Length: 333
Ligand SMILES: [Zn+2]
Image (cartoon, rainbow, N blue to C red; front, side, top):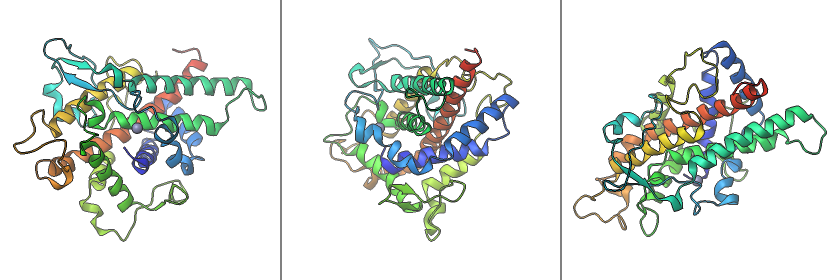
């Protein structure tokens, strides 16, 4: 994913969390309120912060942004982790998830990055709160906010189908860049952005502003994504269980498990969009997917669900990351 898509997803995740205020059990509602208060001064930093993994850290080649599977009927194994049922893409690929797969270990680190950042958020917040202001060893709020933005980056990448597929769609193929450019162009087309300042134009409450003159919005994938998010309820949202992992899906005990389950779905979405055997006359190394009737309609069909899932995951794991340190502070695992 590209620069403004990453920040857009993180800003949408904040909006989703705002819309969920009051919908959880009492303890979780209070923790959500404190998370939103923490995030509220920082939206102007979202574009740069959520992009640091690509511009400053650049661990793309080390696998930080990817978790790449391939079908492997002989030596592979079944992956049993599943995302929560509110994951929209799950319904498109559910019947294929049992197939034996293997991982390209060289380019697969993404769930580890997310788990590490989740624990770093917990640790840095606890250290800061326990030591108190003025001590040289504390983290300030904007440093901790940066960890949230970096976490959002890697979570969003897990939802990009081609990030979870061992096939090389990047070079010389254009499939991967074309897919991400399509999303980036849509975000830039429909939202007010000050590219010089590297910021989205936000209202007083930190909400994204659409370009009102853009009449094609209601036909766009972003509008459809909005419609999905307006109706989206997380599985287990009404649980009385207040532990931070209670919303991650049955059997998923930490960020790592959750991300593996998301990447399994993303890999199968990649096979759905870009079949193992390309359509007759198509070469994946040369095709331009947004100009080709074999791919363009499918990309447009599934993009709203892919992007809505990414927004929802960022929101879910941000809340879990916040709850993780608050609960540890109380001595609850
Ligand atoms: Zn990335």
